[in-house]
Image (cartoon, rainbow, N blue to C red; front, side, top):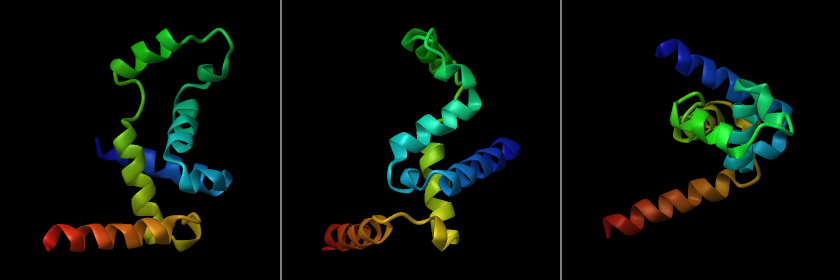
Length: 101
């Protein structure tokens, strides 16, 4: 389990560095991670049903794990932050303050 967490974090970091557009787009980041995990996703004969079956059978990393890895990496490594990092951070502070009052 710990090895899998480290592996996804390394994969996410590599993608964030290689594709800056993924820094602000978790959906694109997830697709890129899954394409690394299964290069057949890029083939024209790979269908939605193939993907859905593999996804249900946990062949791909959970989307929440990818998002958490991205969030942690952007917290630790400022150069991996996207344009909306500070906006998300400010919104989080406002939301937490609003919930407390």
